[in-house]
Image (tube, rainbow, N blue to C red; front, side):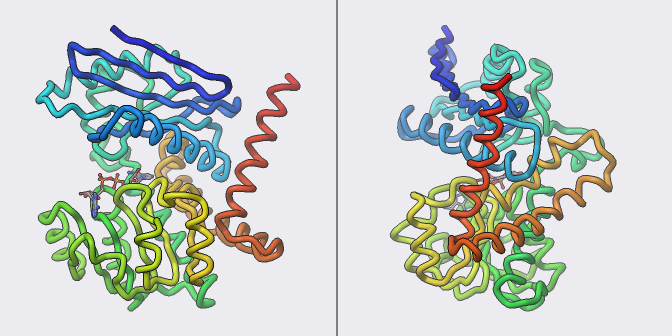
Length: 348
Ligand code: NAD
């Protein structure tokens, strides 16, 4: 039995199917920009409330990401609560595809933590509202490579703002999580000559990345206090909080993880410590840019991803003029763009 709830301009859809121990949440924030394009997480959650709150926060971040990246999308995110029971993954994905289909194209799904390109290929058999599935040589449709490239460009911009040059050679950089994005980012940074320290709760993943990128591995709990110029969160969200921010020795935070701040005032705590925080939804837009523009030529997409650096410079300049943090400036700019969309819709 599928059930479904909705509320004003944001829509919260909750789908449950007891026979499969299935619970999926899709949150949409609609401003009339276009179909919401956002990943589908499949993780374990302590409760449905925790999963719902995460879907809501992530959908908002996707709205901001699309608005700042000037892409024709609303914000949306899906969360599948991973069952502790050993449920057939194909059956879960098929049921999720039915949920996506019931939204009639308002939401296009793709990979996120806990889902893979292979999962997207499974979904593709049951819905046309999916992207990021396996295609070509299996890398051409992988948003993680583009997300890593965007983070790399954003790091260069943040280093330029901090030190007046954008050379990452010899720079100590700490990466938390070397999964899809963190691994590709580590490779780019290694090629640029950075000195890497990494961690991952998956020890074999950390060791493989360390061997390929001459990185030092530390325990996950030790990563915050690593002396470095850039700390790059590339695992899960809410990791910049009152326990971790005081431990940081970095000058810059620039990473892929969505929803990094446990609350907005952590941005002020970082600023008070002289740490430049590059907002997650600004710097991690490479994957969204890639998936949104994948019909364009192969040369076009890296150029668009490189514009992330220009957006950081522009916002930083405005933030300086207005004596705001980069975070406050990015929030304000995203809100201005989204309210302009809402206004246009009301006038139609
Ligand atoms: P992933 O699941 O492939 O990688 C995350 C890695 O972090 C895994 O290797 C995991 O073992 C590790 N990890 C989890 N908890 C950890 C901890 N406490 N300490 C250290 N390591 C830990 O996910 P991904 O696709 O690489 O995405 C990473 C983050 O970036 C997520 O927050 C995701 O939402 C965000 N993001 C991803 C993309 C993309 O293109 N994949 C785009 C934008 C944002």
